[in-house]
Length: 243
Image 1 (cartoon, one colour):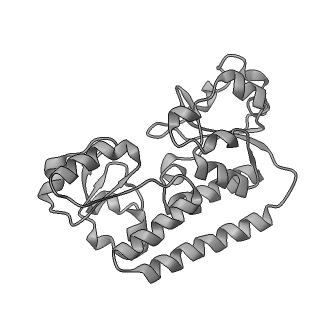
Image 2 (tube, rainbow, N blue to C red; image 1 turned 90 degrees about the vertical axis):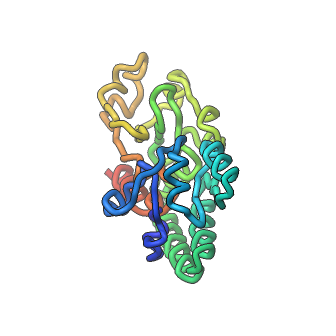
């Protein structure tokens, strides 16, 4: 939804999920008709949308149900920065503002390229990004890429390419062995309790825990697969890794 606002096409939006928080005005002016893995099908149908936008296989059942009622559904499944930029371009073209979308995507590409060049260094802190705490899930591909761009080294970068969250589950033993210098957590839908990391069995020897380098980045800034991650989310990562 944020992408449509950035493209000046917000008037097309008739309903959003409960997780839509950017820009803040969306909470006031758009009807909430879905969660992430569930939706009020009757309310969606009552709005008579020309197109429903969905994300990932986790919303496949919602998409399937709407399709049965003859609703057009576009499901994106971006998992990395390239995918986010492709989504922006495709969505812009779909709603008739391809030039605006291209300009927006190019502006992000330039910012990312400039930052990548600026952060060329061998002195990179080792980062463990925790997307969920029970079970412990490490970051998705675009998060791993942004950590690297911000000047860090994702200790579980090899897992980040796994699309399913269940394939990115890590154990305490693996995190302890990875010995991250910094821990960044973003638990979707709930506040990160930084004090709990030191309470985990054996974690007291991890450099990030010993040196109290545990940080939170709010999930709407980094875990939503859109512009927020490339802007405010990345800015937060840069600030953390530069401190």
